[in-house]
Image (cartoon, rainbow, N blue to C red):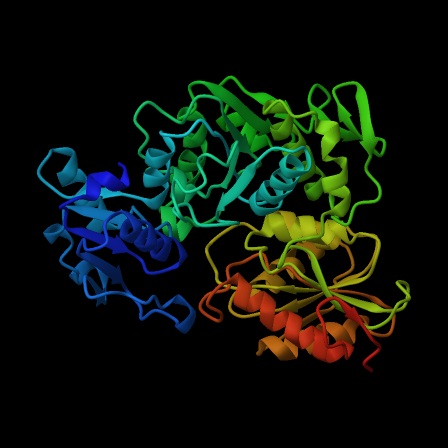
Length: 482
């Protein structure tokens, strides 16, 4: 579907968040007087309000109560699950030619892109998408490629569609499962598309219903590529197994771009040294390899990525140093915001990134029924101490799992403190490492709701509290506060 196809249609935008508001602006640019309706289950937050016009109306309330079948087209924002019964019924009816057509901002983006010669890189995976997408975008810019970054990071999919078409050589798209699962692109993705699958871990099960549906929506990216390149991380078994039916190019392995003995390698050829990089952790080295491999698939020499990798600082809420209590790395306390960590595997990767220091780990959030074995193993197998500060609501349950596993292994139980309030938990974590120096690490391994609106609010609250404890006024600042 393209924007011109909406002419004369009764259109509702499901969700008034970032993507929904961008869709509204795009439609308005093409159809200034077309009646439009926002349908949202909650009142928009102050930063989500839009200066609507007289042809725009809003329905607030349960989706099941909204008159969805009175519209010709529903534009579903990614935050609203297509697996909800009220939407599945509409899609089923529409398949028989009797109902409403449902589309998405991403589908409309690709419809508009059909007029352009720009190439597309679609990057997905459970974790690492934002870092990899941003890295690739900067590598391409540094190599003189006219690149635009869109999706979950960068501009929304429908931000001024078509306005950049004659100025963009490559669109770098960070794509979630919610943007891939029902992507409607007849004939598949554009010729020359590069698809990147970083990893697959159980996540967003409340959105998809079960892990099989979640994985299927992710892997569908490769199914939509008929003329292009499919890149998959060779170190991630689930991703390798799920993509065996496809012709893939592997990275993070000896016959692809990988890291060996402190070098970034392209097969057997040394490219440049790993150090110094501001990005920490083995998982971030994999993200770097993914970005370099995608650049190579686009015809860009991966060696040209060295400057971009050297200059790259962690993105907000992703192993981001937000404060420290002094200059001496051996005695000061560093506060690290990894609020994006919403799976146990992500928290385990963050903990391993700080294997060289004592850590007080803030862990816990919304219970979504995932397995915690990998994180528990990372806690108990460390050479340096790791204390736990457990947060609502599943923190105490995680602590119980740690106690049981420590007893089973016969190993020393880490110090565990339960925090009834978020800020008091940060204070407690600081108290656990302030005498020896180390890291206060917010890497919860779980979603933030309902305590916080999203991981960004959680991370911002952590950063503010950390700066207060450290006595520094700016992000990442250094001043001994106490």
